[in-house]
Image 1 (cartoon, rainbow, N blue to C red):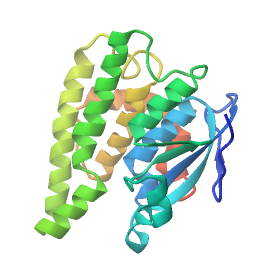
Image 2: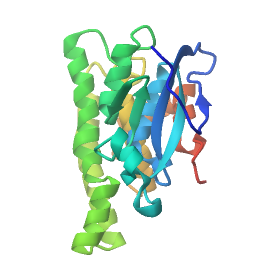
Image 3: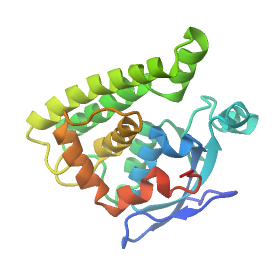
Image 4: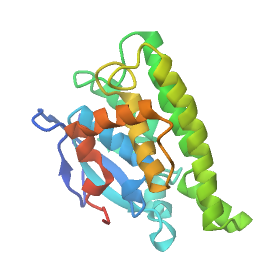
Length: 244
């Protein structure tokens, strides 16, 4: 596969001490709020778990009305959302689709999904419960709409975010605490797709003052993940566009 071109960014290598594959992935990421937003964070974790080299291009979601709405980016990704993965001639939007693409395009690297179909379904269901049922209701577009169209103030928007995260986390805690496949990570003793999605959502929860005490299983899995170099390298504060 050909290497992707890059205009301005840094190279990232994934797991500390691991071999990086000789494919260059260009990962289009948003900036300001972007560097700490969930969807690109998920993909960074997946890239780092699989020890794939890539280049980050920040896309600022607020500046000048949002750089994701610029004509050049809209041509690359008509959804005008981030992240977008560009790998040679292949362009993939949507974080979960990107993670699935990485899993299929690079099967020789660390796996994000287990082998058995039933177990793969479980992992996908966990990931989708977070990405589609929790994060979907708390993303930047929703918050902007609540403020612009319905004049919800900051306290009301915070309550909205906390409500949906608490509801989603309660269901995840119950599932993960009681299913035998849960171990050090969401599924087994190696991190995978569900962990890639869980960790950014917990990061958001802390950012928006969600009490995580009722979710000890989620916190235990988070601690196991954050102890790994791949997760550390993907942290928002470690990114080229971070504002700390």
